[in-house]
Length: 321
Image (cartoon, rainbow, N blue to C red; front, side):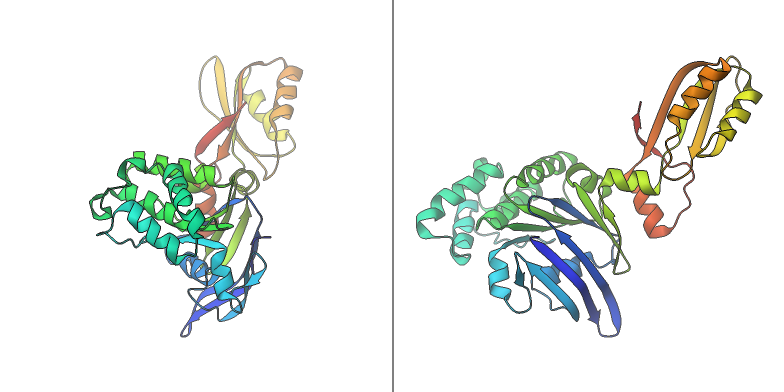
């Protein structure tokens, strides 16, 4: 594992900001660290990068203990903080050359590596421009190029798309999506659409504790299984009664209509009742026009976990035939 945290804890005075969290991230993973503001995301990242000492527990990057080998750990990390500090009076290529020197990129490799990062982050057209004149989107890309310069094993990005417009967000997400070919990526964000778009796995942190760890799809299936919508022609009372008797069905809501009847079937957690509904329709001679299952979005899952909202029928994010 490239990133390992074990019982990582941080106090600010008597305030417990991070409460004994443990997780690991393997090579090539793109992982989102999600949580509401104040949940402990940034504190966790600062402990992983060695910018903030842990009150208890251990963190290792590429096998190196963050507390005991801080310098070696930083050789394996490319970090882009939330405020993305740059030197606004420097030109883009000049700034990257300065940073490459600080990071110890070998002189014989430095120029080609700078040009490679410029190309990967699509900042060729502003490479000779003063950073202070760049748009927020370009400044974010310059910060990402900086984080990549020393070819680190792990990229840690804190709120990488904050303050960007929709087109800039899409471009930065595209860049992040391509990074897993060369890097392990940990993204801290409270923007759920961002995690769903680029992350293969999410860690949800709330009140300083890890409360969920899985893929977005698996969390949706496990925590907020979506309702099944079925459109049938038959006797409505019989349809409701038969559907309610099926194994795995929690509740049935049948919309009043003439002719075709639309039923919203809420299954028990983890149950897939579509085949049972199809068999019931065939057994009773009902005509079947639609049978779809809605899947909870990551936003639904996030609200359920962090706010404890009882969502019996979550909003539809996608449908599976």
